[in-house]
Structures are given as structure tokens and as C-alpha cells.
Image (tube, rainbow, N blue to C red; front, side, top):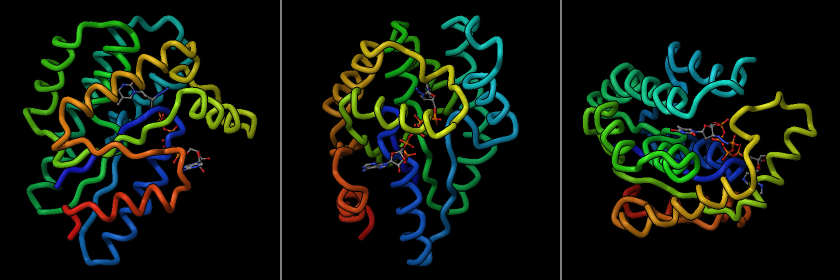
Length: 206
Ligand code: Z5A
């Protein structure tokens, strides 16, 4: 089973993934926890370039898109596919929908092209379930601001204008409306335990 978590920055994806991994492991499941961009040696280097490289401001939108896709091609073949073959549960912090939302709606690149690149990178693997942690852009930005004030390093991907994050959030809501059988939308303004109670009540965990 491949389960992905999507949403804006600060929506609580990492928090929910940890809760779900702990619960599934306590039930005896083998869980592989991974993230995008990242999850492999190559992917983590790409992540560093995308988020923190000093020349990051000069990275073009096109190069950025292809880096996300390259990291995805690697994680699918090196981590996700083998884990699914073993019968493990794979929990992935962001996946294909992020590229549609951020590079498509956010950066304004053609969605059809991004979907084709996603299919190329994944070899057609699609999540069995996606949890969309839906959060108004201003709440996510405030959570990210608090993190920056607490000393987190500057992040190239978090420097966009408010309109960018509104487009991302709107795109996620549209994707959820288009694929209700896969994507479950959760109110990420609720306390973490309340959000998790909705996830663990999902019939796929019975
Ligand atoms: N990106 C892209 O553009 N295209 C792609 O194809 C892919 C990614 C795959 C990855 O950054 C960036 O890459 C991301 C999209 C882009 N960029 N932006 N901007 P990342 O992995 O570093 O960050 P993130 O994915 O945006 O996650 P995050 O900011 O680390 O947040 P999170 O994992 O969703 O939330 P969290 O760490 O669990 O919680 C954040 C804080 O809120 C923390 O202090 C928690 O204690 C608190 N929190 C968590 N849940 C709650 C609730 N329910 N209430 C109140 N407070 C909460």
C-alpha cells in the first residue's frame, strides 16, 4: 500500500505521518517512511539544491521541475517499488500531486506536461490513498514563519508570495474533487490528534 500526504507547508504532514507509522507498526505492519524530494542519497542531494543551495535563486522553473521529477524517478525505483513488492506499507511525505500543485498551479507550467512527466517518473505507480491536509495559506505561512523565527535555515521554496500559496491550495482542492476515491481531504486547522482520528478511521486500515 502506498499512502501519500499532501498539503501546503506547515500543514502537519510530517506530524501525521509519524503518528500513522507508529500506529501501524504497533499493529505489526512493516512501514517504510520516506519523503519527496529526498528519500534516497541522490534525492536528498537534490532536496538540498532545491531548498538551500546558494545559487538557488537563479534556478529556473524548468530546471526546478526536472529536479523534482529526477528525484521521483529515483525514489520510485530505489525505495517505493521494492517496498511495495515486499508488501510493506509506504508512507510518503509529498508525491506527484505536489508537482501538479506547486510547479503547475504555483509556477504556471502546463499541467498536462507535468502529468506526463509524473507518469514517466513513477512508471505508472499511483498512491492507494492520499491525505490532503487542507489549510488556509495564511495559517501555513504563519507556522512556517514561527519555524524561521525559531532558527530554521532559510528555505528557497518558502519565499513565495501569498498568491502563489493560494493557487497551490486551490489546485489541491480541485485535485481532491477530481479524484475523491483516492484523495481524502482533512481539516488541518484541527489539533493533530483530531486530524489523526480521521485518518485512522479510514476503512483502508480496518
Ligand atoms: N515541492 C514542490 O514544489 N514540488 C514537488 O514536486 C515536491 C515538493 C515533491 C518541500 O519542503 C518543498 O518542496 C515544499 C513543496 C516543494 N515547499 N514549499 N514551500 P519540505 O519537505 O521542507 O516542507 P513541507 O513539505 O512544506 O512540510 P513542512 O513545512 O515541514 O510541514 P509539514 O510536514 O506539513 O508540517 P509539520 O512539520 O508536521 O508541522 C509544521 C509545524 O506545525 C510544527 O511546528 C508542528 O508542531 C505544527 N503542527 C502540526 N500539526 C499541527 C496542527 N494540527 N495544529 C497546529 N500546529 C500543528
